[in-house]
Length: 256
Ligand code: GLN
Image (cartoon, rainbow, N blue to C red; front, side):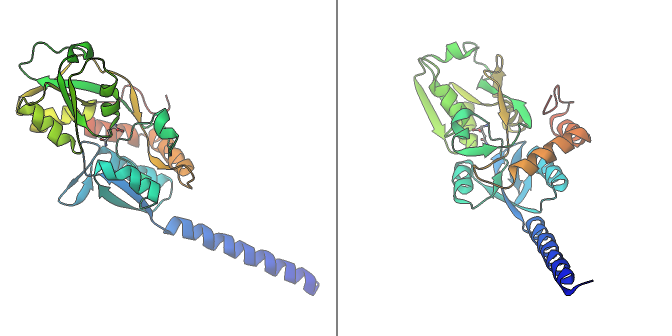
């Protein structure tokens, strides 16, 4: 064997080592994942700890994708900026995938199908559909898809946008507004846990929305996250978590 050969092997070995080391680095660096502190039952904080369907779903996805991570809870209004500035690498926070947002952000494959609903006071007999919102005062969360959707409904008297959805719900409980429009599952959760029988959901879902994990357009994670989502659907983890948090089997699995 010539010295030249050994040299080549040595070089090959060196690059192999470099590759192993750099692969190790990407898995060891922890990914900063933004969650929302008040979007039950998806992500919320209780005694400083991140909880919810999405927190547990993310844990399972991250395991499959071999991603170490750190959860960073924040307010809804801070999430977009945190993703843009790189304060977080990803966010999982009931973020609806839509075309306007796709211009600025990258989204994973959808992992949850849902939509918006109308809430009114329990004794309200006049509001049944979105047409009945004409001339009415409607509250929702500032910057949310519900805020945009409500803005397109004709004839609404006033839209009150609140940074925290709890404020919008409280206004409805106190009958300071006629209705709230917001994400269906969050609305259900509110009615069950804090509605005190004062609030109800009326009519059908207004539209169809899907949630996705969001990141900067140029990112190194979404591909792996998608593989993780596929894997947790395949091995039954998704259905088990769905049942745990929503009390029934999902009618359709992500990707179906
Ligand atoms: N799905 C809604 C949106 O993307 C609300 C999300 C939230 O409040 N966390 O705007």
